[in-house]
Image 1 (tube, rainbow, N blue to C red):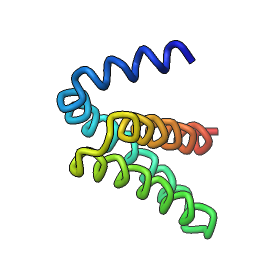
Image 2 (image 1 turned 135 degrees about the vertical axis):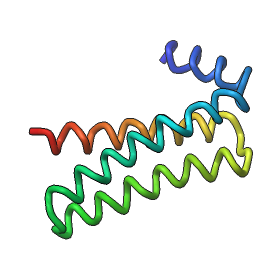
Image 3 (image 1 turned 180 degrees about the vertical axis):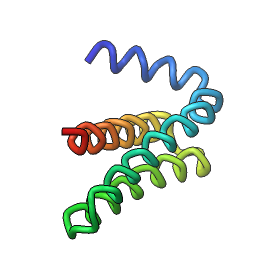
Image 4 (image 1 turned 180 degrees about the horizontal axis):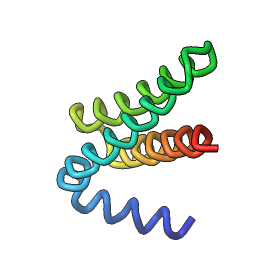
Length: 93
């Protein structure tokens, strides 16, 4: 929890810069997750996961554009990146 608090404090200190810089890798990771899902077939499960990956990525991008509170934006960034990475790892094996 201490690491989370330290990262959040740093994110709050320079939110505009960090949020803007994080959009590119977060979107790229989401795009890779979407590609993995589409390459493994159009099953209902994959389509639901694709929807969730897309919504999490768009939620973070929207939070940055809307300049929401730092904690909300940071939590959406973590959620989006972690979920996309889980999808990628799950489809590699």
